[in-house]
Image (cartoon, rainbow, N blue to C red; front, side, top):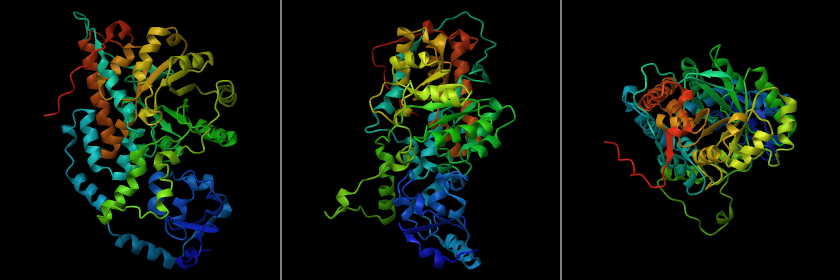
Length: 484
Protein backbone atom coordinates (compact mmCIF):
# COMPACT_ATOMS: atom_id res chain seq x y z
CA UNK A 1 0.00 0.00 0.00
CA UNK A 2 1.22 3.50 -0.82
CA UNK A 3 0.21 6.80 0.73
CA UNK A 4 -0.71 10.22 -0.59
CA UNK A 5 0.66 13.41 0.91
CA UNK A 6 -2.90 14.40 1.73
CA UNK A 7 -3.44 11.29 3.83
CA UNK A 8 -0.11 11.64 5.61
CA UNK A 9 -0.83 15.28 6.43
CA UNK A 10 -3.88 14.26 8.47
CA UNK A 11 -1.62 12.61 11.05
CA UNK A 12 -0.05 15.78 12.37
CA UNK A 13 -0.41 15.68 16.15
CA UNK A 14 0.57 13.73 19.23
CA UNK A 15 -2.48 11.47 19.00
CA UNK A 16 -1.53 10.33 15.51
CA UNK A 17 1.91 11.30 14.28
CA UNK A 18 3.23 10.14 10.91
CA UNK A 19 6.39 11.31 9.19
CA UNK A 20 7.95 10.76 5.78
CA UNK A 21 11.62 9.78 5.60
CA UNK A 22 13.22 8.98 2.26
CA UNK A 23 9.80 8.64 0.63
CA UNK A 24 8.59 6.10 3.18
CA UNK A 25 5.91 6.67 5.81
CA UNK A 26 6.35 5.87 9.49
CA UNK A 27 3.91 5.97 12.39
CA UNK A 28 5.94 7.39 15.28
CA UNK A 29 3.03 8.11 17.63
CA UNK A 30 4.06 5.54 20.22
CA UNK A 31 7.71 6.56 19.93
CA UNK A 32 7.18 10.24 20.76
CA UNK A 33 7.81 9.88 24.48
CA UNK A 34 10.75 7.53 23.96
CA UNK A 35 12.61 9.78 21.53
CA UNK A 36 15.87 10.91 23.18
CA UNK A 37 15.47 14.40 21.75
CA UNK A 38 11.94 14.75 23.08
CA UNK A 39 8.65 14.70 21.23
CA UNK A 40 8.60 18.35 20.12
CA UNK A 41 11.19 17.95 17.38
CA UNK A 42 9.23 15.06 15.85
CA UNK A 43 5.92 16.89 16.14
CA UNK A 44 7.48 19.78 14.26
CA UNK A 45 7.48 17.49 11.22
CA UNK A 46 4.24 15.60 11.96
CA UNK A 47 2.37 14.84 8.77
CA UNK A 48 5.30 16.07 6.65
CA UNK A 49 8.61 15.08 5.11
CA UNK A 50 11.28 14.93 7.85
CA UNK A 51 14.15 13.58 5.73
CA UNK A 52 16.28 16.74 5.83
CA UNK A 53 16.19 16.94 9.61
CA UNK A 54 16.50 13.21 10.18
CA UNK A 55 19.35 12.04 7.96
CA UNK A 56 22.35 14.05 9.24
CA UNK A 57 22.03 12.77 12.81
CA UNK A 58 20.60 9.25 12.52
CA UNK A 59 22.23 6.02 11.36
CA UNK A 60 20.53 4.10 8.58
CA UNK A 61 19.25 1.37 10.91
CA UNK A 62 17.70 3.68 13.53
CA UNK A 63 14.14 3.22 12.25
CA UNK A 64 14.51 -0.53 12.11
CA UNK A 65 15.85 -0.66 15.67
CA UNK A 66 13.30 1.69 17.23
CA UNK A 67 10.05 1.02 15.39
CA UNK A 68 8.12 -2.22 15.08
CA UNK A 69 7.29 -3.59 11.60
CA UNK A 70 3.70 -2.42 12.01
CA UNK A 71 4.95 1.17 12.33
CA UNK A 72 6.66 0.97 8.93
CA UNK A 73 3.62 1.95 6.89
CA UNK A 74 5.07 1.77 3.39
CA UNK A 75 6.05 4.13 0.56
CA UNK A 76 4.36 7.30 -0.57
CA UNK A 77 2.50 7.07 -3.89
CA UNK A 78 3.86 8.20 -7.26
CA UNK A 79 2.23 11.60 -7.09
CA UNK A 80 3.79 12.17 -3.69
CA UNK A 81 7.22 11.14 -4.98
CA UNK A 82 6.97 13.71 -7.72
CA UNK A 83 5.80 16.41 -5.32
CA UNK A 84 8.60 15.67 -2.84
CA UNK A 85 11.26 15.73 -5.54
CA UNK A 86 9.89 18.96 -6.96
CA UNK A 87 9.83 20.55 -3.50
CA UNK A 88 13.42 19.48 -2.87
CA UNK A 89 14.59 20.85 -6.22
CA UNK A 90 12.91 24.20 -5.66
CA UNK A 91 13.94 24.53 -2.03
CA UNK A 92 15.70 27.80 -1.39
CA UNK A 93 19.10 27.50 0.22
CA UNK A 94 19.57 29.17 3.56
CA UNK A 95 22.13 31.89 4.14
CA UNK A 96 24.20 29.42 6.12
CA UNK A 97 24.13 26.86 3.29
CA UNK A 98 25.21 29.54 0.81
CA UNK A 99 28.03 30.59 3.14
CA UNK A 100 29.26 26.98 3.37
CA UNK A 101 29.16 26.58 -0.42
CA UNK A 102 31.17 29.75 -0.87
CA UNK A 103 33.89 28.76 1.58
CA UNK A 104 34.13 25.20 0.22
CA UNK A 105 35.22 26.73 -3.08
CA UNK A 106 37.86 28.79 -1.27
CA UNK A 107 39.43 26.00 0.78
CA UNK A 108 43.21 26.12 0.72
CA UNK A 109 44.96 23.17 -0.95
CA UNK A 110 45.74 20.39 1.49
CA UNK A 111 49.49 21.01 1.27
CA UNK A 112 48.94 24.36 3.00
CA UNK A 113 47.54 22.64 6.08
CA UNK A 114 50.65 22.27 8.22
CA UNK A 115 49.19 21.78 11.69
CA UNK A 116 45.93 20.81 13.40
CA UNK A 117 45.02 24.44 14.08
CA UNK A 118 45.07 25.10 10.33
CA UNK A 119 42.65 22.22 9.82
CA UNK A 120 40.34 23.56 12.52
CA UNK A 121 40.35 27.00 10.89
CA UNK A 122 39.18 25.51 7.60
CA UNK A 123 36.54 23.38 9.32
CA UNK A 124 35.10 26.42 11.06
CA UNK A 125 34.52 28.03 7.69
CA UNK A 126 33.06 25.04 5.84
CA UNK A 127 30.90 23.54 8.59
CA UNK A 128 27.28 24.54 8.95
CA UNK A 129 26.69 26.72 11.97
CA UNK A 130 24.74 23.91 13.61
CA UNK A 131 27.58 21.41 13.12
CA UNK A 132 30.23 23.85 14.31
CA UNK A 133 28.20 24.70 17.42
CA UNK A 134 27.83 21.01 18.24
CA UNK A 135 31.45 20.05 17.61
CA UNK A 136 33.15 22.97 19.35
CA UNK A 137 30.72 23.49 22.23
CA UNK A 138 31.71 22.82 25.82
CA UNK A 139 30.09 23.28 29.21
CA UNK A 140 29.11 26.59 30.78
CA UNK A 141 31.90 29.15 30.21
CA UNK A 142 34.10 26.54 28.52
CA UNK A 143 36.83 26.86 31.15
CA UNK A 144 37.57 23.13 31.20
CA UNK A 145 37.87 23.12 27.42
CA UNK A 146 40.47 25.88 27.55
CA UNK A 147 42.36 24.42 30.50
CA UNK A 148 42.61 21.00 28.87
CA UNK A 149 44.88 22.57 26.25
CA UNK A 150 46.61 25.01 28.62
CA UNK A 151 47.67 22.15 30.87
CA UNK A 152 50.18 20.97 28.27
CA UNK A 153 51.93 24.35 28.48
CA UNK A 154 52.87 23.61 32.10
CA UNK A 155 55.06 20.64 31.15
CA UNK A 156 58.49 21.02 29.59
CA UNK A 157 60.99 18.52 28.23
CA UNK A 158 64.32 17.55 29.76
CA UNK A 159 65.89 16.48 26.48
CA UNK A 160 68.91 14.18 26.31
CA UNK A 161 71.52 14.65 23.62
CA UNK A 162 74.26 12.62 21.94
CA UNK A 163 71.96 9.63 21.48
CA UNK A 164 71.38 7.75 18.20
CA UNK A 165 68.01 8.67 16.70
CA UNK A 166 68.43 8.07 12.96
CA UNK A 167 66.03 5.16 13.34
CA UNK A 168 62.98 6.34 15.29
CA UNK A 169 59.97 4.07 15.80
CA UNK A 170 56.79 5.69 17.23
CA UNK A 171 54.67 2.53 16.98
CA UNK A 172 53.08 0.87 19.99
CA UNK A 173 50.21 -1.39 21.00
CA UNK A 174 46.86 -0.55 22.60
CA UNK A 175 45.25 -3.48 24.42
CA UNK A 176 47.56 -5.66 22.35
CA UNK A 177 46.52 -4.18 19.01
CA UNK A 178 49.16 -2.57 16.83
CA UNK A 179 49.15 1.11 15.93
CA UNK A 180 51.78 3.10 14.07
CA UNK A 181 51.50 6.01 16.53
CA UNK A 182 50.57 6.35 20.22
CA UNK A 183 47.26 7.97 19.27
CA UNK A 184 43.70 6.83 18.61
CA UNK A 185 40.42 8.36 17.54
CA UNK A 186 38.33 9.13 20.62
CA UNK A 187 34.63 8.39 20.29
CA UNK A 188 32.77 11.35 18.78
CA UNK A 189 29.14 11.44 17.73
CA UNK A 190 27.42 12.68 14.57
CA UNK A 191 30.24 12.90 12.05
CA UNK A 192 27.64 13.17 9.26
CA UNK A 193 26.85 16.67 10.47
CA UNK A 194 30.18 17.65 8.91
CA UNK A 195 30.31 15.40 5.84
CA UNK A 196 27.83 13.02 4.15
CA UNK A 197 30.20 10.06 4.58
CA UNK A 198 30.70 10.81 8.27
CA UNK A 199 32.47 8.19 10.37
CA UNK A 200 33.45 6.18 7.31
CA UNK A 201 35.82 9.01 6.31
CA UNK A 202 37.60 8.49 9.61
CA UNK A 203 37.65 4.71 9.26
CA UNK A 204 39.15 4.79 5.76
CA UNK A 205 41.51 7.62 6.62
CA UNK A 206 42.93 5.69 9.58
CA UNK A 207 43.39 2.41 7.73
CA UNK A 208 46.78 2.98 6.01
CA UNK A 209 48.51 3.94 9.26
CA UNK A 210 46.70 1.42 11.50
CA UNK A 211 45.34 4.15 13.75
CA UNK A 212 42.58 2.69 15.93
CA UNK A 213 39.14 4.30 15.79
CA UNK A 214 36.79 4.29 18.76
CA UNK A 215 33.23 4.38 17.42
CA UNK A 216 30.59 6.19 19.47
CA UNK A 217 27.27 4.66 20.50
CA UNK A 218 25.87 7.85 18.99
CA UNK A 219 27.57 7.57 15.62
CA UNK A 220 25.59 8.96 12.70
CA UNK A 221 26.26 5.84 10.65
CA UNK A 222 25.31 2.35 11.75
CA UNK A 223 27.94 0.27 13.52
CA UNK A 224 27.67 -2.19 10.62
CA UNK A 225 28.33 0.48 7.98
CA UNK A 226 31.44 1.63 9.82
CA UNK A 227 32.67 -1.94 10.31
CA UNK A 228 32.13 -2.69 6.62
CA UNK A 229 34.37 0.24 5.65
CA UNK A 230 37.42 -0.96 7.56
CA UNK A 231 40.36 -2.77 6.00
CA UNK A 232 40.79 -6.48 6.82
CA UNK A 233 43.41 -5.87 9.52
CA UNK A 234 41.92 -2.66 10.92
CA UNK A 235 40.98 -2.44 14.61
CA UNK A 236 37.82 -0.74 15.86
CA UNK A 237 36.91 -0.07 19.49
CA UNK A 238 33.42 0.80 20.73
CA UNK A 239 32.43 3.63 23.05
CA UNK A 240 29.48 2.36 25.07
CA UNK A 241 26.97 4.76 26.53
CA UNK A 242 25.14 2.26 28.72
CA UNK A 243 21.37 2.47 28.35
CA UNK A 244 19.37 2.45 31.59
CA UNK A 245 17.61 -0.65 30.28
CA UNK A 246 20.09 -3.51 30.59
CA UNK A 247 18.39 -5.45 27.80
CA UNK A 248 18.89 -2.59 25.34
CA UNK A 249 22.50 -2.20 26.47
CA UNK A 250 23.08 -5.93 26.02
CA UNK A 251 21.64 -5.89 22.50
CA UNK A 252 24.08 -3.13 21.59
CA UNK A 253 27.00 -5.11 23.01
CA UNK A 254 25.98 -8.26 21.14
CA UNK A 255 25.73 -6.31 17.90
CA UNK A 256 29.21 -4.84 18.08
CA UNK A 257 30.69 -8.19 19.18
CA UNK A 258 29.25 -9.84 16.08
CA UNK A 259 30.61 -7.03 13.93
CA UNK A 260 34.14 -7.61 15.25
CA UNK A 261 34.75 -4.58 17.45
CA UNK A 262 37.69 -5.38 19.72
CA UNK A 263 37.10 -3.51 23.00
CA UNK A 264 34.46 -1.61 24.95
CA UNK A 265 35.14 1.86 26.35
CA UNK A 266 32.41 2.40 28.95
CA UNK A 267 31.62 6.11 29.21
CA UNK A 268 31.04 7.12 32.84
CA UNK A 269 31.37 10.92 32.80
CA UNK A 270 28.15 11.74 30.92
CA UNK A 271 25.33 10.40 33.06
CA UNK A 272 23.27 13.58 32.60
CA UNK A 273 23.17 16.24 29.87
CA UNK A 274 25.49 19.15 30.54
CA UNK A 275 25.00 22.84 29.82
CA UNK A 276 26.49 23.31 26.33
CA UNK A 277 25.23 26.79 25.55
CA UNK A 278 26.66 27.13 22.03
CA UNK A 279 24.80 23.99 21.05
CA UNK A 280 21.56 25.11 22.69
CA UNK A 281 21.71 28.55 21.07
CA UNK A 282 22.45 27.38 17.52
CA UNK A 283 18.81 27.14 16.30
CA UNK A 284 18.10 30.68 17.50
CA UNK A 285 21.22 32.03 15.81
CA UNK A 286 20.22 30.39 12.54
CA UNK A 287 16.69 31.79 12.79
CA UNK A 288 18.09 35.29 13.36
CA UNK A 289 20.44 34.90 10.38
CA UNK A 290 17.61 33.94 8.05
CA UNK A 291 15.19 36.65 9.08
CA UNK A 292 17.68 39.38 9.88
CA UNK A 293 15.57 40.02 12.96
CA UNK A 294 16.37 39.16 16.54
CA UNK A 295 13.28 37.79 18.22
CA UNK A 296 12.62 39.22 21.65
CA UNK A 297 10.13 37.88 24.15
CA UNK A 298 6.88 39.80 24.36
CA UNK A 299 6.31 38.73 27.94
CA UNK A 300 3.74 36.10 27.07
CA UNK A 301 4.52 32.45 27.58
CA UNK A 302 7.81 32.12 25.74
CA UNK A 303 9.81 33.27 28.76
CA UNK A 304 8.86 30.10 30.59
CA UNK A 305 9.76 27.73 27.76
CA UNK A 306 12.61 25.29 28.43
CA UNK A 307 15.43 26.17 25.99
CA UNK A 308 16.06 22.45 25.45
CA UNK A 309 19.10 20.22 25.64
CA UNK A 310 20.68 20.97 22.29
CA UNK A 311 21.85 18.23 19.95
CA UNK A 312 24.33 16.89 22.49
CA UNK A 313 22.02 16.68 25.48
CA UNK A 314 19.39 14.75 23.60
CA UNK A 315 21.82 11.93 22.89
CA UNK A 316 22.28 10.81 26.50
CA UNK A 317 18.91 11.30 28.18
CA UNK A 318 18.30 7.53 28.33
CA UNK A 319 21.71 6.61 29.71
CA UNK A 320 22.13 4.76 33.00
CA UNK A 321 22.42 7.28 35.85
CA UNK A 322 22.92 4.65 38.54
CA UNK A 323 26.12 2.91 37.47
CA UNK A 324 28.37 1.73 40.30
CA UNK A 325 31.69 -0.08 40.64
CA UNK A 326 29.97 -2.89 42.54
CA UNK A 327 27.15 -3.44 40.03
CA UNK A 328 28.01 -2.18 36.56
CA UNK A 329 31.50 -3.58 36.03
CA UNK A 330 30.57 -7.13 37.17
CA UNK A 331 27.48 -6.98 34.96
CA UNK A 332 29.55 -5.90 31.97
CA UNK A 333 32.13 -8.62 32.69
CA UNK A 334 29.32 -11.20 32.85
CA UNK A 335 27.97 -10.38 29.39
CA UNK A 336 31.14 -9.89 27.34
CA UNK A 337 34.68 -11.18 27.04
CA UNK A 338 35.89 -8.06 25.28
CA UNK A 339 38.49 -5.87 27.03
CA UNK A 340 36.82 -3.19 29.16
CA UNK A 341 38.16 0.34 29.49
CA UNK A 342 36.56 2.98 31.74
CA UNK A 343 36.29 6.26 29.84
CA UNK A 344 35.93 9.39 31.95
CA UNK A 345 38.20 8.92 34.99
CA UNK A 346 38.80 12.37 36.51
CA UNK A 347 40.71 11.76 39.75
CA UNK A 348 43.34 9.46 41.23
CA UNK A 349 40.86 7.86 43.62
CA UNK A 350 38.67 6.56 40.81
CA UNK A 351 41.71 5.33 38.92
CA UNK A 352 42.50 3.18 41.95
CA UNK A 353 38.93 1.85 42.09
CA UNK A 354 39.07 1.01 38.40
CA UNK A 355 42.27 -0.95 38.89
CA UNK A 356 40.71 -2.77 41.84
CA UNK A 357 37.72 -3.61 39.62
CA UNK A 358 40.25 -5.29 37.30
CA UNK A 359 39.27 -3.46 34.14
CA UNK A 360 41.74 -3.56 31.29
CA UNK A 361 42.31 0.15 30.97
CA UNK A 362 41.28 3.64 32.01
CA UNK A 363 40.86 6.72 29.85
CA UNK A 364 41.50 9.89 31.83
CA UNK A 365 39.01 12.29 30.31
CA UNK A 366 36.57 15.08 31.11
CA UNK A 367 34.72 14.55 27.84
CA UNK A 368 36.69 17.25 26.07
CA UNK A 369 35.44 19.85 28.55
CA UNK A 370 31.88 19.08 27.48
CA UNK A 371 30.50 17.70 30.76
CA UNK A 372 31.56 18.87 34.25
CA UNK A 373 32.85 22.43 34.18
CA UNK A 374 36.04 22.91 36.24
CA UNK A 375 36.93 19.24 36.08
CA UNK A 376 40.71 18.80 36.17
CA UNK A 377 42.52 18.66 32.84
CA UNK A 378 43.28 15.01 32.04
CA UNK A 379 47.01 15.73 31.78
CA UNK A 380 46.98 17.02 35.36
CA UNK A 381 45.18 13.87 36.51
CA UNK A 382 47.80 11.79 34.66
CA UNK A 383 50.59 13.72 36.39
CA UNK A 384 49.00 13.18 39.81
CA UNK A 385 48.52 9.50 39.09
CA UNK A 386 52.16 9.15 38.08
CA UNK A 387 53.47 10.97 41.16
CA UNK A 388 51.02 9.59 43.75
CA UNK A 389 50.15 6.06 42.58
CA UNK A 390 52.68 4.96 39.93
CA UNK A 391 51.90 1.28 40.55
CA UNK A 392 48.54 1.76 38.80
CA UNK A 393 50.35 1.83 35.45
CA UNK A 394 51.42 -1.78 36.08
CA UNK A 395 47.81 -2.88 36.64
CA UNK A 396 45.91 -1.18 33.82
CA UNK A 397 46.70 0.57 30.59
CA UNK A 398 46.22 4.32 30.98
CA UNK A 399 45.16 6.71 28.21
CA UNK A 400 44.12 10.33 28.10
CA UNK A 401 42.21 12.59 25.77
CA UNK A 402 41.29 16.27 25.79
CA UNK A 403 43.21 19.31 24.60
CA UNK A 404 45.72 17.43 22.42
CA UNK A 405 46.64 19.47 19.35
CA UNK A 406 50.37 18.86 18.82
CA UNK A 407 52.77 15.97 18.61
CA UNK A 408 54.57 17.47 21.60
CA UNK A 409 51.33 17.08 23.58
CA UNK A 410 51.23 13.39 22.71
CA UNK A 411 54.85 12.86 23.72
CA UNK A 412 54.37 14.63 27.07
CA UNK A 413 51.45 12.37 27.91
CA UNK A 414 53.35 9.23 26.94
CA UNK A 415 56.30 10.34 29.08
CA UNK A 416 53.95 10.60 32.05
CA UNK A 417 52.72 7.05 31.54
CA UNK A 418 49.93 7.21 29.00
CA UNK A 419 49.92 4.22 26.70
CA UNK A 420 48.24 6.29 24.01
CA UNK A 421 46.44 9.58 23.53
CA UNK A 422 42.97 10.11 22.07
CA UNK A 423 41.85 12.92 19.77
CA UNK A 424 38.20 13.60 18.99
CA UNK A 425 37.48 17.05 17.58
CA UNK A 426 40.57 17.12 15.29
CA UNK A 427 39.30 14.07 13.40
CA UNK A 428 35.83 15.55 13.10
CA UNK A 429 37.30 18.78 11.75
CA UNK A 430 39.57 16.97 9.29
CA UNK A 431 36.86 14.76 7.82
CA UNK A 432 34.45 17.70 7.64
CA UNK A 433 36.91 19.91 5.78
CA UNK A 434 38.49 17.42 3.38
CA UNK A 435 36.91 14.02 3.90
CA UNK A 436 39.07 10.89 4.06
CA UNK A 437 42.20 12.68 2.80
CA UNK A 438 41.83 15.24 5.57
CA UNK A 439 42.01 12.45 8.13
CA UNK A 440 45.14 11.06 6.51
CA UNK A 441 46.62 14.54 6.52
CA UNK A 442 46.32 15.14 10.26
CA UNK A 443 47.72 11.68 10.98
CA UNK A 444 50.70 12.56 8.79
CA UNK A 445 51.10 15.89 10.61
CA UNK A 446 51.01 14.20 14.00
CA UNK A 447 53.49 11.54 12.89
CA UNK A 448 55.94 14.20 11.74
CA UNK A 449 55.59 16.16 14.97
CA UNK A 450 55.85 13.09 17.22
CA UNK A 451 58.92 11.69 15.47
CA UNK A 452 60.63 15.09 15.39
CA UNK A 453 59.97 15.57 19.11
CA UNK A 454 61.28 12.12 19.97
CA UNK A 455 64.47 12.65 18.02
CA UNK A 456 65.11 16.06 19.55
CA UNK A 457 64.63 14.46 22.98
CA UNK A 458 67.18 11.75 22.20
CA UNK A 459 64.54 9.01 22.08
CA UNK A 460 64.31 6.30 19.42
CA UNK A 461 61.45 4.14 20.75
CA UNK A 462 58.20 4.73 22.60
CA UNK A 463 59.28 2.76 25.68
CA UNK A 464 62.17 5.20 26.12
CA UNK A 465 59.70 8.01 26.88
CA UNK A 466 59.80 8.11 30.68
CA UNK A 467 58.65 10.51 33.43
CA UNK A 468 62.16 11.86 34.02
CA UNK A 469 62.06 13.46 30.55
CA UNK A 470 59.35 15.96 31.47
CA UNK A 471 59.11 18.54 34.21
CA UNK A 472 56.10 20.46 35.46
CA UNK A 473 56.60 24.21 35.95
CA UNK A 474 54.47 26.50 38.08
CA UNK A 475 55.07 29.69 36.13
CA UNK A 476 52.86 30.66 33.23
CA UNK A 477 54.65 30.57 29.86
CA UNK A 478 54.28 33.37 27.35
CA UNK A 479 51.13 32.98 25.28
CA UNK A 480 51.63 31.54 21.83
CA UNK A 481 52.22 34.23 19.25
CA UNK A 482 49.53 34.76 16.64
CA UNK A 483 50.19 32.99 13.37
CA UNK A 484 51.85 35.10 10.69
